[in-house]
Image 1 (tube, rainbow, N blue to C red):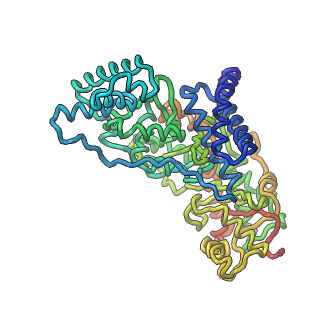
Image 2 (cartoon, one colour):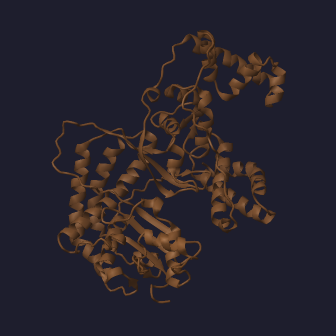
Image 3 (cartoon, helix red, strand yellow):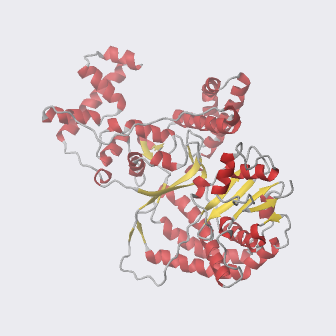
Length: 541
């Protein structure tokens, strides 16, 4: 959006934003601070946006999101909570027990938009005049008459046509899993919003083709009366985006319902080739860079744990091939303070069932990077990635900032194995951050994590350029399976993930199998690829 247009919008909405801030805060000073944050975020978002079709909704959503983040960061100690919007779930709907034609008419009324439903019901069922309806709804009488006329035409058309149930009405999609890249809100990640099957299918209904509210209802084989509040709720939380003609699209990343095993196998083969080169030429440089560090406490004293973590981080970060595409529009900002790229994993069938694979593909899944920073103790920072080389359970949802804060308090001697600290100590032992004998059981490094990771060398530019051709070829092929609005994200992520956690796991396989690293004990798997950074080590007091 051009700067001049963004300036105009901010000027127009400034007083409304300030009024919003005053209602939310306890003092004018605090309101001014919140207002400034909202204006700054709204202005930057407008400059990045190509076009905004629902300006008021756009500004409202940014205001709610900024306030939620403000409460989370600034008011945590004051115990303020944010109440989210609760949308009821309807398993089914009834059309009544009247005669068939009356039932059909009621059904068609339910397919009208919310405004037209209110006008039709008021005029025909409650005998209110046009002027009464206009006053009650705050509309000009001419507008009410226009809606009545449009509603009559829509009802006639719907009454005489045979409504066809769309694909999602007959075979709704189901999510196999949800993931996010960014910061979840106070209610969690996308699963809070899309775990409801109806919400999930509303969003998926506009994934491949933008649709109006009425078209969403037809695709799902349901009346709009049961969907409209949900559509507004999903739009208000960023899962639906309004576009031209009051149609909706989405930037949620759904996995394709078909995949090519031949393409997947080629990708794995290319990645294995790259992993072999990195294990020979790059991993020794990383291991040498961290070998002499003395400010790390390692359970059992196996320094290979530090080297392995550094190699994993180096391969997944210092060798990555992220594209240059702008992906800001893919971040979903929810009213509970979330800001993340949302992904949904759907069941997929092979598009090439007759293709016979030449290799068996092991589990290369990884949950991470999981970065945990403490507002309470600024020096405390946790980095971890959960893979088959670790024994940790619960992935990101079980990896709490409070775990690292409690361990820091134990290291500092401010909590002990007593009744007062019972809950914290039980939690640390449950996660095996502490042994039953109260010994620290994960790697703890003194200093800032940023400094540690900066010391890991970058990949040679010659190798990076060589790998980039393979990554771009795969990304271009993968993007063809996605709708147009998602292709920039798919190319960006496919390039970035081509050498990422998957290749890092492949390098780990090579280094553990060829004897460079000795096999992990069960206890070492607790801290494999997990390091806590802070300003003191266990035993320093």
